[in-house]
Length: 326
Image (cartoon, rainbow, N blue to C red; front, side):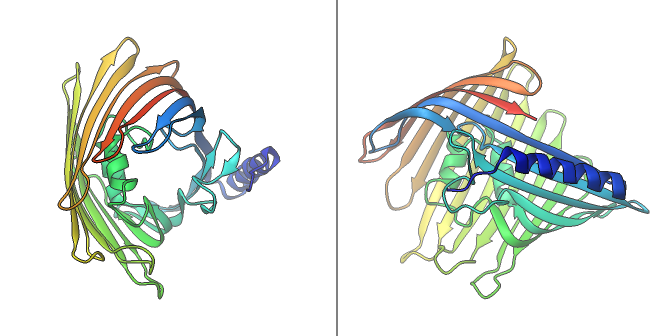
């Protein structure tokens, strides 16, 4: 098990400061820590109680920056690493790479942004934007059904990839990504249209995963929407995933609905997700929580979840946690 020492983080910060001073670049160290006291019973398994990392957001730290090249052109880069704050170990799990959240360098200008390295996929970004629990692998039915239930393959970020983000055209952006196969199948391709203006948000996403001999080939499409009525923000998603490596093909239909209601300095969050395969066990997940802001950078939360998978005992989870952004 590997650990990232405090001295190491201090050295990264000092190097970043030195680089910013010499090259007159903008460099920032940032991150998020999320730890909770949790009761967790997955469907068909025994309950576990303890201190857990990343129930609402996976803890991470990062280093990003830019250099003005003149004429409206800039170099951009990011290095971002997941870690488990409950144990001090790096990565989301044992064997996870160090910079697996993001590690890219690219150019940005009036044409948009082009990034080379490891980039987040548009499907993951759209999934987290259009559900009230965001990128919570612990309690977002949508995130759990797409990325933690054996449906979508290829992870939430792709290595050996090139990503393009267009300029904002009156609220509309185009996001494209391709990951080179490099002799290991592939390539992977994906893209999205994302619209956000005023109270309305819309998205349409497609991706195809073929990279990796041990990874199933899948195709996924998703539609998402949100509307903020001030007194309540509503979310809806519908998508389909097809595993073309299975014989015969396995298809999944995914429906997710949610609301976020401002209340007393925080928000009441509720979401329901249905994962309905053409063949196999149906999964229904219901989450309810309250997220209270102690400041602009710190919030505390209480979340309950019921997770039902056909033919197994129901999953039941509860967490009381704190998040801090720096």
